[in-house]
Structure formats: structure tokens, C-alpha cells
Length: 316
Image (cartoon, rainbow, N blue to C red; front, side, top):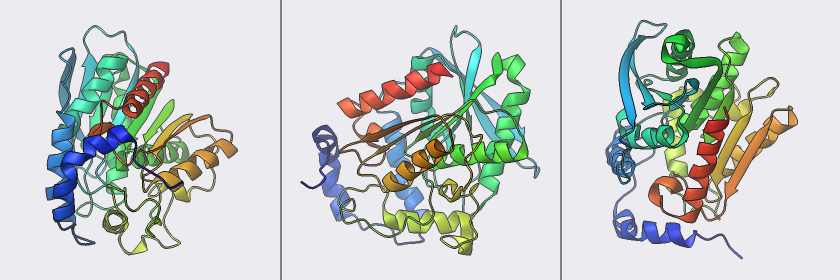
């Protein structure tokens, strides 16, 4: 029996199918076209559900190690008890997306869990290739750690989270913080993370269902890494699938859809962490493509996934 879409996700995708079939996909290497195509879709998905009224936001300007100014946005539920916090990294293949487009999802996580989040406006490739986006994330982690007392945050209960490229960045950040002896990270929550620059050969079982495509991967990774993408010299802090020693990394929650280009690299990463003695909770969602929770947020699989994420947030 071949792989098939979850029926509820298929129904949610049906109105989009005609437009997607008629549209010419962007050429490999065309970052601008991908920004123009995907950012309106992400924005619409983020506001398709109500934005909670019980979450307050504050913006801060933060100076990075190279002197740049980036924005971080603090989300907190009204009346929430001080305790843990999470540093959130948005998706977009490292080449598109910004924090405004993810106001809805972040606010809903905060409202449902009571755990505040700091969302990072990291700089994007190709204008800012590796390691700049990751260094922005590390600077934000240090910023949150330093300001923990005034924000009501327990420094021993700071987690990192992200989806897609943001999940890959969250994973890379745990490696960087460990290697530098930096701020403690209590938990990593990796949602369909983008981990391996070598995932470029189409899987015929997956190709009919992918939303983030192999051509997207062949565009995004070189934008981030340049000519070294796919070669032997890519560090684990750029592509966490390259990690050889997972010892000492924080407990991980990892999930991915079975119809996602990132399925195999995420499964392998969960195994790699487990073999190093890292506590891992791993979910493989059958019939689910990339970003299934945004496409079909009322589906049973999306509701289960969101409930699991909220449960893990509360456990930090």
C-alpha cells in the first residue's frame, strides 16, 4: 500500500490544488520568487485562527556581536506565573519569513501553555549567510539569560523551539551553546526541523505530496552555506545532521510528518540523540506533509500535535 495524505489534510489542501497546479514553481536558486510566493501564504495561515487576547507583546532592540541591531519580541500571557521561557525561531528555509508572520502561532502557544516566548528576528540568507543567523540566535539566547530576573524567568528553565528552518536553528543553537559553554538550555522543541543540507535527491514516494520541495532545499542550503553546501566541510552548527557527538545536549521533542522532505533526517537525528543518551520524544505523523498544522489546523493530527507541543512547553 502506497503512502497517502491524511483525508482531513487532503480536504484542506483541495481548494489550493488548482492554483498550485497552474503556477510555475520558482526556479532553483530563485530566492526572491520564493519570498514572494511563501510569505503571503504564511501570513494568511498565521491569522486563519484567532489571535488570543490574553497575550501581551513587547519589542526590544538587541545589539549582536557584530554590532547589528535586531528585534526580539516578548510574548507573555496575562497573569501567568513566573518560571520557564522559550526562545522561538521562525521557519522559512533561512531565506524568508519574519516574526510578524508568526505572531498568531507564537501567541497561541503562549496562551495555551502559559509559557512566555521570545521570538527572534534573525537575519536571513543569502544576504546574511551562515553563521550570521545562528549568531543572532545565540545573542538572543544570551540576552534572554541576562534579563531573566526582570522578565520573571528561571534561568534553569529556558528552552529553544522552532519549526522547519527555525527547528534546525534551535537544534544548532543547542550544539553551539554546549560547545561554547554558553547559557543552559533546558529543552529543545524541534518541529519538522530542517537539519541536513544533503537532502537533495527526490524520494519518489514523497515527491507527489511535498510542499517544501527538493528544489526548495537545493535553493535554501546554498543560500545559507554557499559553495560548501552538500560537501564535506559543513559543520553541525550549520546543519545539525552533521553532528558526530550528541553528548550533553538537552532533552529533545522532535516531530515530523511522514510526507515531509525532512522525514528521514529528523528520524535519524532522533536516533542519534537517543544513542548518545539524550532523552528524546519523537513523533512521526502518518499522512502529514510539511506545515500540516498550518494547512489543516482543525484536523485530528494537527490537534494532537499542538496538544503535545503545549504539554512539552508546560513541562520545561
